[in-house]
Length: 338
Ligand code: TYM
Image (tube, rainbow, N blue to C red; front, side):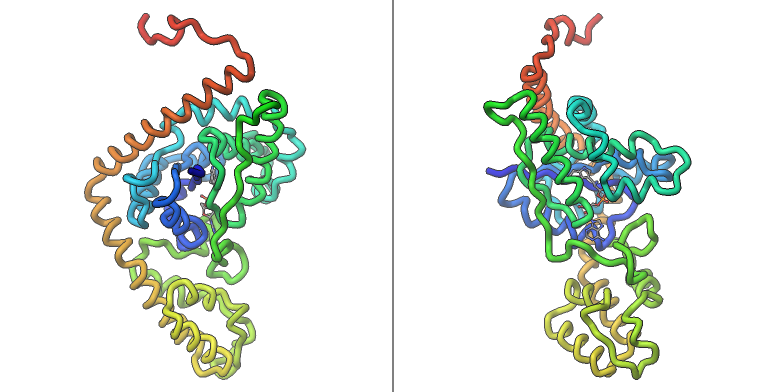
């Protein structure tokens, strides 16, 4: 059975871009495949403002968001990256075969490093840790949004180079392929950039109906619709895109027609979207409220997930050490007794 791995940063909020671009796919795949999903807290350390303070709480909140969205620990292994220390261990082994030039070409690195006076090495090496996440479980498929595709290309290159160096006759690491949804790049409410927590242009999956409306109301639509009477082009509007994910097909058709004929103003269109979005997200909010009231249950699920992931991760590291030809430790060296 093909193996699936994916990860998400504990950025404090699971937004509808994450949900539509990746997490819905995670949920759909978990019945049929062997799936591992990680909350990648070590990746969050490379964020300029994200590392400090409430990372612990944000990690648990992300777990709650994922479980409420339908990740089922009976079917998928859900865990916290830092609980399985083999992620950092494999990263070092992969560091040894990764050209710096390729890291410097990563678009996300260039965007994030631009304007920084001092660039942390972690920002450059971020995609090596991401490759380690995937290769540690020798995963074949990685459900992600479009912004991660370049990182996966790099992961394939790293796997290829590692195999050529250490396991040329029988490649040890599979070359992981991305799995994209139709919503591979959800636009933010500013109508321009990708929806992203750092841009402040998101709608959270746990936002109340009132907050959804407050966020949607001032959002940017087709610039041709200056006044209510100006007709627009639905296909270029980010809100029409969202209707396609949250409104029934008949409504989507009506939205397109009312936009083209100026039958509705943008505010009417937003009102319908806000209602449909709130309705779709209501069961997720309810489930999240239940889980928030039982944090020990969430922590217990994460602990079980980490134990399961660790067993597989250890086997990969041990085999990688063997293939590299590192000296195996004497059994006494692995004992914790003094
Ligand atoms: P992160 O935490 O930024 O996002 C999690 C997932 O959500 C997708 N996504 C989107 N999809 C569509 N439209 C959007 N506006 C949008 N915003 C986010 C992302 O593509 C991602 O799939 N580096 C990764 C986390 C990671 C990872 C991994 C992913 C670490 N190790 C190994 C896969 C495999 C990240 O920062 O995603």
